[in-house]
Every structure is written in structure tokens, then in C-alpha cells.
Image (cartoon, rainbow, N blue to C red; front, side, top):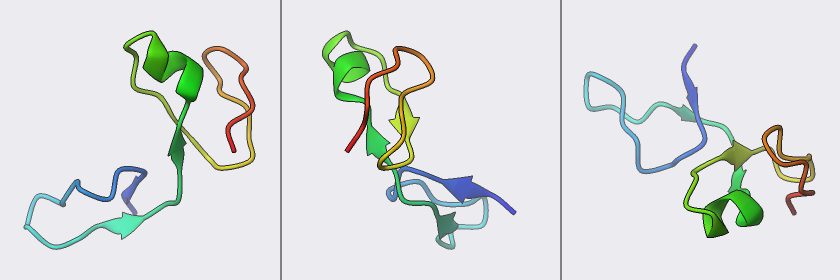
Amino acid sequence: MLRLANPSVRSVYGAHAQLMPGVRCPTCASNGVEVWVLEGRRCAKCGTACL
């Protein structure tokens, strides 16, 4: 099953995919990199706690 962190993304057939809650890592975002992390976890790329 396809799970997407970004709620604006649609599946191939135009229907909404099942969404997985997530937040963007603020440290990576400030460096111009888009990384999605489960809320309350640490970013796998930089280690920042994402709340």
C-alpha cells in the first residue's frame, strides 16, 4: 500500500492515497533539502528531532 507524507500528492488514478502523518525536517528544509519525518522522530539525514 502506498503511503505518502505529503497530503497534496495524489495516486496514479487521481484518488487520494492513504496518508501517513509527517513533518518536514526544519534543519534540512533550511538547507534546501526536502526530508519528511514521522512526527516525534529524528531525521535520518541530519538527526534533528522533528516535532
